[in-house]
Length: 431
Ligand SMILES: Nc1ncnc2c1ncn2[C@@H]1O[C@H](COP(=O)(O)OP(=O)(O)OP(=O)(O)O)[C@@H](O)[C@H]1O
Image (tube, rainbow, N blue to C red):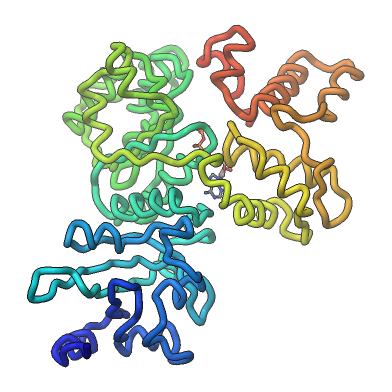
């Protein structure tokens, strides 16, 4: 059945690339903006959207990509996702919105698909530094995209090494505060007095050693973003102080009387289960509600193994830009089998070592050392042979032990018989 002329005219008048697809994903119409962006040839009418945009032979949701169609169909309302689409310029990030249209019998028979290009503007690797195209990764990226421009506090949840700090920076860059400071504070292992003076600053003479007035991070973050990493590690006494700041937007420097105000956007992150900590009474419920308005979960690497080839290429390029190194198929297969408890950080460390061990341009499985179940690493043998200062031995040993456990600090603290806070203190400056 031909489409109504009014619909075609409306489509043509709209500035973004738009197409009309039927319930079998077939493209029935495309406006000039679409043809301009996606090229005139070959003709798109009559082809399926998944073939044109993804070069797939089956619909996206059958290929592991998220597809807004099912949701739009079921709910009868617009549905949006972020996809990578093939364009004449190569692959680009595109926000796809599907608007279901109903016929006279109130049945959804057509969809208007709108595409907004994000690629050149802000999204992919070179700008946000975050690489991936698996559905769970793109969904997470979409949440960052949505939350970025607002002032809503965001809580980033995810295992160590999943990219929480990168995500926090991405939120900052996507916000109108991007030209103001991004100020990170790692809350783990900070003694109470240091936490206060780091966060709020101190007056001259506030305590022994305070020879100068010092601005706190809250003051530095004015107009920008304050990133509180490992917020779940904050003891209750420090949680109260943070809560007061978040409730009133005001604070005092240590040893000061003046009430100061700071306008910052809060992003917090933790690898802990904060809800459980609230139930256990180790994390304040009121603080939890303050910081968790918009939780975003960062998927662990083992849930997005299909991103490994892209990540490997990106990390090798960053670690050794001069060398054109690649992985042999066997080495890639070895990585694909691994669970990566230390996530992208573990992958990066693994590749860094492999680059040292491989002379040529090919990384083979024998160059991949330091998996939880991998063979002995060189530094371990070296530390047995040489006499070294104790500090250096500790440094080497901790680095080695952490690698053996895939970057899992909690497991390492347990194995070493020390608290996680003590471990964090010792690791500070080491990694
Ligand atoms: N999607 C990604 N693309 C490229 N690099 C990534 C990605 N995610 C993480 N990385 C890299 O992995 C390393 C760890 O990332 P990051 O420090 O952001 O993790 P984290 O979750 O904050 O870890 P922790 O909780 O231990 O502080 C960094 O070198 C970062 O650049």
